[in-house]
Length: 138
Image (cartoon, rainbow, N blue to C red):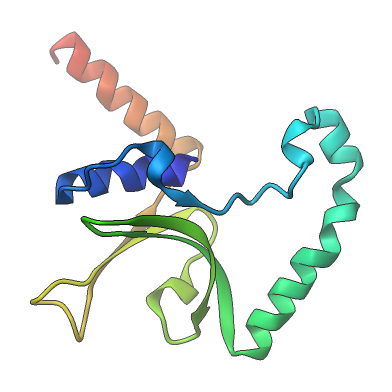
């Protein structure tokens, strides 16, 4: 849902009239697992390996990589796991990196790509410190 919320912010900047409930989101949590306690989920983790292994193998056979992606337009927002081609900038993402690929009239054939850290202790702490300094008027 974090990705969906971020996509909604971007969508609103583009003129998307919808709300969070209007976004098509493919959850990474297996069906039924959302009702489990964290302890139950961790105890049953191996049950979820086979479907993920199949998806990963299929992506690799196609010469691609699995990535969780949001597509944002004025009319629609979709969030979910997709197979990206090995030549895609998304295929080179590592760890918690985020990437924005802007395809516009000007950047249609060669989209504008921005990549950087999306999370992690240092990035999160820096963001919080920045917010606190703004609030303090520093």
